[in-house]
Length: 323
Ligand code: SF4
Image 1 (spheres, rainbow, N blue to C red):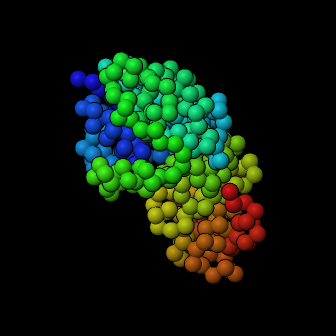
Image 2: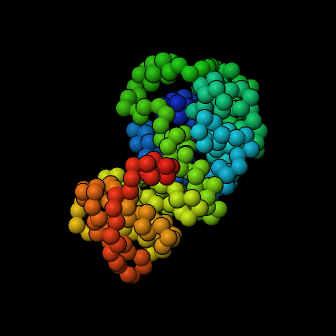
Image 3: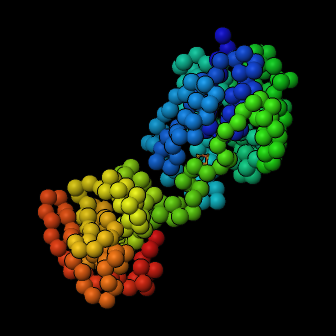
């Protein structure tokens, strides 16, 4: 039985790539990845839809290492797409060799993304992955050199497609012809393409050499303020933020919240006491306490709990420090 392993994001292109190969009676296994920057939700949903067996692999460690100095640089934000795809294909290539798959498929479309999916980038990604002759892009295969499986005639190249460019009309029609509905909308899902998240990530990388995974997760929630080199303060904006910030906090951090009014959960990661007055004033600022008088703020560190009095931070202070 011929078997292929598919890089499977759960987006329409990866769904169509799988279906085109399955139509040739080839067994396909989906492979998707997680990091703090993207998750497997979309892939899980689509795999269920297609009845596709799916493996989820956490690649946080190698991805983070690559992210700090990607050989081919970043896209518009901090998305190192060429190096990221290369890494994913390297991992898929290892699995292919170790688990007896015949080739790898991806949903990449030539010309769909100007930087990472032009002909040269696809060539670089394939070459650097170490398994170039085993990577099939079924949606654009007709525009690319045949891989080993095509030359060996274990896949019928004439049934593969020659899609080029950013338009999605062809894919949408093909999905309808194949009876595929309810797929997720394109794009989204990778925080490395999100301007606000990547501004915070850049700030973290430039102020803190060692960081925990939870530091990357905390960047997703609340308002973030940087107090020079003393550290940062995170202020929840709503209940979800407050819950998440609490969830990712540790004993080392200082946590603050209002004693007598509804207000945010505030965190000083790694607990620099010098930031306590500023953090308390931010806590008051985003609470329901009157802005012109002092209010009590509870602060907790390790097992001790105390109260500090603070007035709301001025708007200009917030604007100056916000990341
Ligand atoms: S958008 Fe994100 S997940 Fe996708 S290739 Fe780029 S860096 Fe990787």
